[in-house]
Length: 113
Image (cartoon, rainbow, N blue to C red; front, side, top):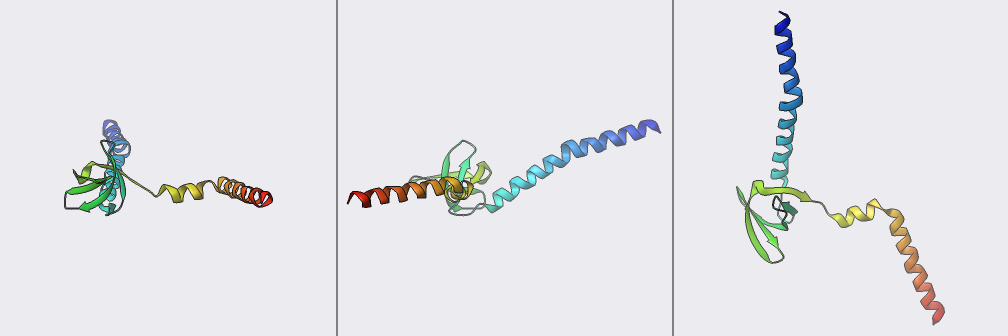
């Protein structure tokens, strides 16, 4: 009876520490593959950066500065977000400092004229 409890506990621990996280990671990967759309900036497993030009059932055509390359859909490592929008939202203090610099330069040019 005591041995049966240990086996159940070990199987339960294996499920929560090994099987469940692997399924969750696989589900996230599948969601990434399904969410890729034409025009998305992507990074391939090989490190190649490009923009999705066309999507077939299992192939993705990537535009790399005018060169079109075909890859398996599963070779996409991640989808890049629009970094310009993130940068402007991430550091509002830097944006204010840049605006003040521009205002200072404009006022200096006006005073010289």
